[in-house]
Amino acid sequence: MAEPIVFISRNKIKGGRAEEFRKYYGDSVSMTSAGKPRTLAQLTYENEQATEVTVVRLFPDADALDLQLQGASERSRKTYEFIEPIGVEIFGVPNPSTVEVLKKIAGSGVIVNINPRYLGGFIR
Image (cartoon, rainbow, N blue to C red; front, side):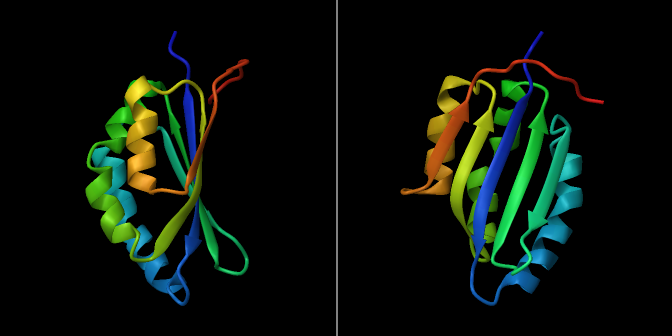
């Protein structure tokens, strides 16, 4: 059985752009939901000061994460008008090329942490 992958990205909201980001993100959710059917969950949270946003995604396996990343470079260009990446965490074992793709999309100086040891659990 394939192991699930959890992908978490932390991002700084650019000064004064929180409201614009909220609208942009809200408009993009239905497109992502329809276009990325193997993404089991995408949950986004903003801190109280509206200075950071965290995106949590859940995938059934590493291949589903790769499908999510298809077209990410293009989507990121627009998204990065409002936010800039701080860090990425992956829980599970991504496909070997995935980490390099993520580093390229996120940019230099953004740390990508991988936590490969899945001990078990459940998804409802």
